[in-house]
Length: 90
Image (cartoon, rainbow, N blue to C red; front, side, top):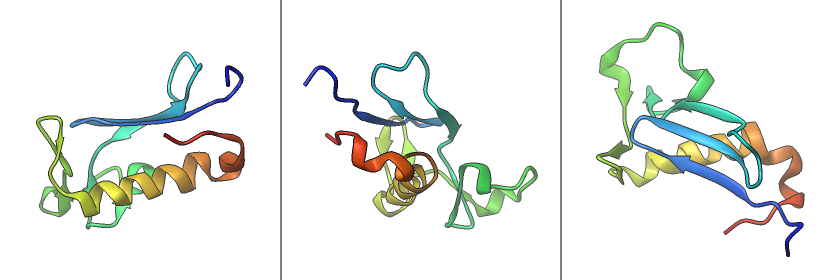
């Protein structure tokens, strides 16, 4: 059990951090927000209209589960999918 690596996804009110247990730092850090209800992380353009931004976390709690699931799916497809068979998920 000691050699197993767990996936870590930490969705905070401001930033989401994605990585693996045992690493010094997360492999990715991006704003916990969605643009046009579908774009996450590096999919969000450099300049954007604030009207089209939504935040699925408020005061450290999930306020929109559908949106947080989109962020999780983005994390898995962008950062974990290639190695998913090799990690433990809790």
